[in-house]
Length: 267
Image 1 (cartoon, rainbow, N blue to C red):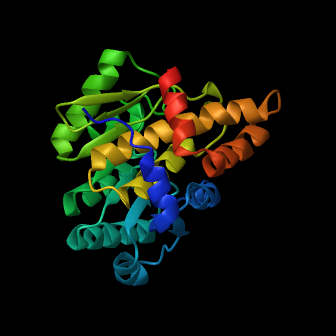
Image 2: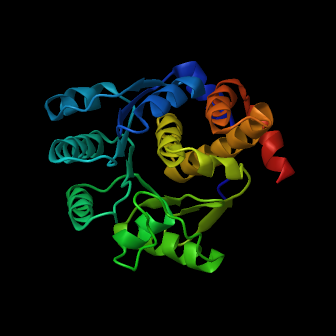
């Protein structure tokens, strides 16, 4: 059974892997700072012309299709293909894929061109990729769905796309199409700030950069992010979402492997 391997956090901080993020305008700064806090070295290159060179230099890629345009989709396509060709992990976050027919069409073109190591989605995004009635509201997925619905959606998306899936939410689910792993905990306050799903995608890339098994990397990333949210809730106290956002970075930069293991044991 796949379980979180928090020793990977120490490996990340020792190796400082270079993680390439094609991010979106809303969360780029938070994603870069989170990668740094966790111990990795982020590069936020977006120009299609440099995708080959960046792919050759980096240990993992995190492709986020939020705030999209044609140039960005071209960059994601080139970077995804290069990563697969080099045998390095590629995390794809099709943010808000159900927000418009154009966005869904372009995301599906990416998936036709290369198979990512992992798809990181919320319920609405997964439903859109499965051509089901989506619960998306812009880039958000306000409907939580039943546990059975979420589990079947994660499994089906993994089977249909032939890759691992991390379906995020109050309870994160990781699936390879057959097995399913559940990661609980965290804090409901993550819903008060934008970009926490994007940041989880980055953590998947951070851990995948030092762990060949993508399921272990995804489960560890999800568990680490839940531990960060729980710690941030305590650090922020009664203060508002701005303080909680800063506390998330503080937690990511100070939690140790032993701290994370203790958090997981409490759940």
